Image (cartoon, rainbow, N blue to C red):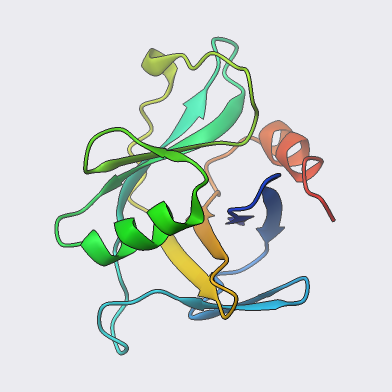
Length: 145
């Protein structure tokens, strides 16, 4: 299971059954993976699911691997989410919640990818196989589709 999030206001969240690879069709947009080398998989870094005190997943924090400056600039261009220093990107799926930092330390090293459409819309993919079914159902209901 993969969480695909279009960085728009509001966020558009959907779950994909399989690894999307280089290309994702979402709504009326075609997204291509942002890469440094067109022939190589790009490891963005590890990520933590951001959780509340009750353990509900309400966002994700991506900790960039070295050498991902281009991807950071693509994410900055989306004007959604926020940077905490040069290597930490936080994206909240739910507004107005308090993050429990002690519960938000998954350190997932699974798939994380950045995509961009021709209209410059940016999206992220995170492998979500570790999420509880209740989190998947709750986040899927937030989709604008």
